Length: 339
Image (cartoon, rainbow, N blue to C red; front, top):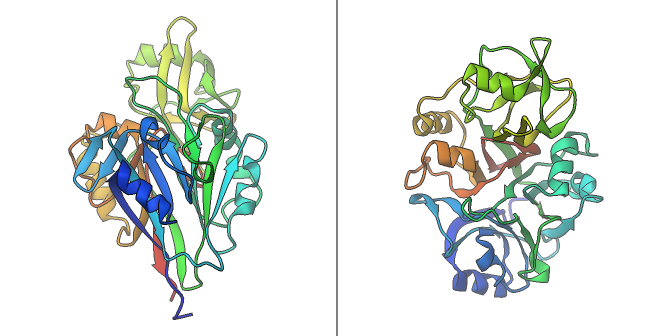
């Protein structure tokens, strides 16, 4: 066991030419970048997702000229990582496909059917929570309004918008992967809100048991829609972030689904995002971070461009995956020695 090569992930930004060279050298990678760059990448051992927002070592940045790369080092020829593409019919088997001892990196394109399926059903997938699954929801520059896409590296830079991609990484017995969530939000003291259906788009709800319109309640209370709805999912605080309110229909569009029968409250305000992130990071074990991602809403609302969040780096995303879909969180995975 002591002679086993350990897995580690090198996480940093590169220009296009460097990433092409790394692919040609056969390296296993997860790549985030603008679609114009991903489309130029050759076939190889990689998965990718579209996004131009990042947390680099120098701080938050928006870039269409660089790619953020998680390079998986220490892979062994006899038991290499496995790269898989999933559609709406096959995503339910992702946890079954995961290595018995290892982890999975998953990228889902925002607003796709496979995204909706995963958001609604992932906690019920077979073998879920047996092997760590982390990842993110791909997106686009907010000024573009284009479709979010992913790339299945073995096919080259062909971008797809209705499928998910994953890389399953076996670990040696001497290592273990652990997934952590930094969520700045707590349930507020307001009324309990429940919904009659599980959906990304809602109108009717119960507010302390009284039939109501969520949009009317938000407007009537003057609520800050930067604050998510928060619920307790089996001991984990899960956020549901508001995307927009359709004033003509009265529907509230969400970044993640609300679930029928679950009790939600609007979050307590966070006065200083950067300070809150710093304090939260210091309270967590971040010494052996191999992968991390942060939500686009945290990036925008806390004005993280040009600011650092400790030594945590990675893509800024339209949603985070820590087994299940999350919003307005920072997700990271550590690789630790087994003692």
